[in-house]
Length: 626
Image (cartoon, rainbow, N blue to C red; front, side, top):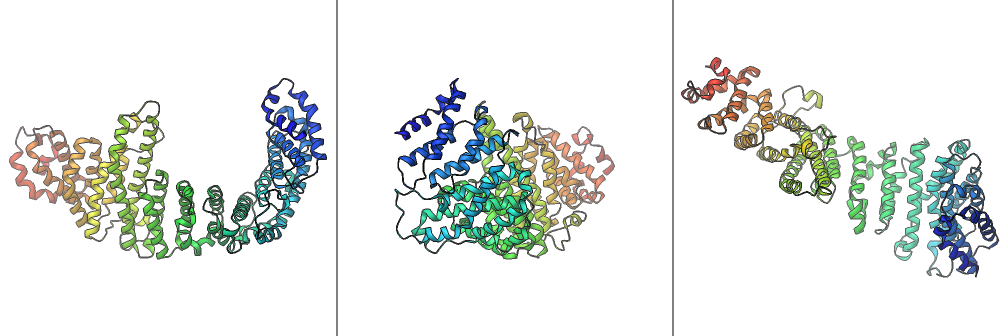
């Protein structure tokens, strides 16, 4: 039989293409195969004639698009472009794959000897006609009571699977033949845009998800592919988005609801298209729908695979939307956003990049919350979330450091470097954001710029004081992640240092009210001393506390009291650090003169110990003070 011989030829394609007689083979066989394809009638059943056409199309699809095939490209395209309107579904899909491969390969070479543009108009005309028939095909397919006969092949003109292949081909043709299409672009868009809106606005009949599961899945794929095409023309062709502003957000929500639970790839493409559309003014139309979009089940779906693979994309897409419309959100919506993305910060099943993105989104809401005079509760929740995440980072840090110690030179080194870099990025985001949160909790907020230029305080509360104590203690334990990074890990692209992070961290406590700050440093001064003793780079923190006017006097008093209690160690191994800290305190009197007041109660404790030969004698400032 002819089909058996063509099938054998199809399976031997690798042998044929590697032969030195490949060019002669093409010159002899291709014309005969094309003639046989043209002479074999289209079939709607799986018989000998269908197999002949199917095997020839599979052969044309598998054959490599090399220079040897170029002389035949125009003839092949002429044959396969005429196939889809009358062909059955499987053969039409093969023909569409050949069409996209040949246009992509031979047009991209700018081959002047080939005139492939003439096939573009024919194909676009057929695609437009297929979209016009969609309502009738939808009605027919969803009206069928009995399951389709497996021996009957669906016609391409009625197939959702065939139509789903078309939008991406149209996008490719728009890109490859921009000059050819440009002259008639307005006409094409006037024909296609109403059909796109009709397709996206079409609803699945009630109950069809149970009675016509496969048809529903194919139809949703058509709608998602059409949405991707719409995203392309909105972003690349300058189409006015105003016509879609009122309807498109509702259609996207409808697709999220109807997309089958097991259609992971379809939902992913839907989220990507949605993300592109959110870059346009259409995003404002999503504001009334935000309450529904905050449901993770709606965004990600109910499928296990979707939950495991699509959550990062879903949450980052939603975060893009929230970022752009944050000034239109109500207090209740903001509260739900804080609840959702606070969970993401602590969800270790999400990548560090998503945890960092979630942190940045919460920080973007601070100013809006402050404007709405709702800072007390909501911002405290954000602060609590940040502090808890720092605490969890502290708990996981030993595992990371242990991983570095036992790393394999070929594999674990890279893994360890990536984890360290991601941890650094998240920690830096949390630390830099703390100041914004504390700023938002201050009374009479005007703007971040104005607030940064004048002393600001937050109202003292037991809960905040406890949070701030935990923050200082646990953050100090985490800052070692920035130590010796360039030496050990080789991540040259990062310029984060302990000094920079600690300076930002210290500035947070410069905005805290004095009573709360006094509580924090009085409880944690011993731990701070131990950290500086172990990591000299941490000396930046007491330096900053002493030079910030808001925190200087309280910290000078607390530190001096602590140092006096340690004066018995001046001749011990810690003497260098103790002298350094004494110097810092005494020098702070020059920067903040009012600090000299805190020295007076301690004169009696210092004078007996300040005798010739004491290490304190080497501190010049002590002479002028006395």
